[in-house]
Length: 292
Image 1: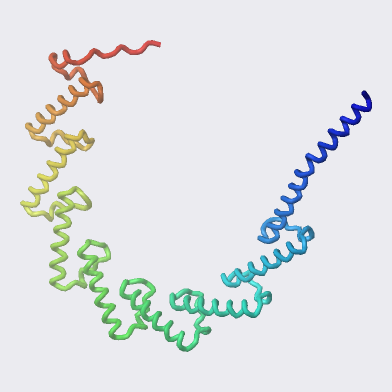
Image 2 (image 1 turned 120 degrees about the vertical axis):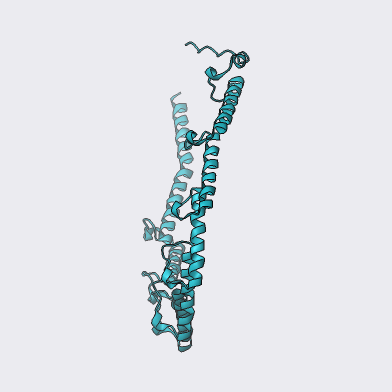
């Protein structure tokens, strides 16, 4: 019995050791992969001494490509000394093109000194066009001293039209003193129509003193209809005192019918005290409150 027991215990120990071996191997492999990933991405803790020769080559290659990318992106971590000759040439071309693009777009990083004479001419044309556009649109970056006589006339026309639009639309930037007599008359008409619309629709600023007698009557009709609509909808802004006697009766009849329908169907607000005796007889009795 003692010999058999010892043999059985030895068998269990062997099985336990072999069953744990794959888990340990997987753990070591996983740790190796994590270390390799950290070294290649330069993120996290990297132990270079644990890398195999091939893995070390992968890490060096990844670091080189990362430096090439940093240089292409204009990053401060770029190390030009680590670039190969073809990479350095490609980077020089990319940087030159990026500088041209910055200059054409008026970006502050533009270095005019690095432009060729023909590139400088193209950039000068782009800068002039951008300045003309800024002046025409009324931007603060406009430099009038750079405008030619014809360009200044073009900008003056654009400014006049912009002021006319502002006045017609009732904007605060409108300068009435810059309008011609005909434009001033048209702007006055537009202002009057806008005020009439505001008064009629109860929207924006309304100056009743600027309305004619017929317009005042039309606005009063619109206000009355708007109030009647609010009352029909049960709106909080309804002013019942402004309704006519017939309108008040019609609203009362409509409300009475709504209340009767709510009581009859058991859906919506129902006030049984408003029902006539004959109506009350058609309504089911109210259910008793539930007892606990």
